[in-house]
Length: 106
Image (cartoon, rainbow, N blue to C red; front, top):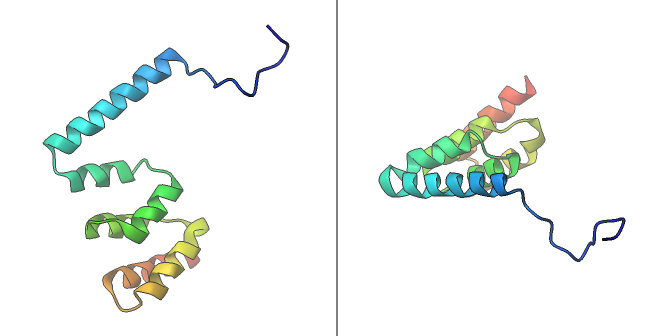
């Protein structure tokens, strides 16, 4: 065994972390099969990263998910909000993005 980590060797995952991720994945799949997918996605949106929230604001299938994502974007996501306004200036999502930009600016 050497003194340093071998960069060619894959990092090992803690077994407890692997079990936790498997349970989380199983719960998500169960919820998607047994509940309203739109509600499941809205629930996941509350704990998603900024990147995933921006992606949802730009392209989510359900209007409610897009609107919720737009309403939760913060100052670092101004460029995403501006893209929405540019793409859909008179639409529901464009108006929501304009309102969110105004909230962030104040």
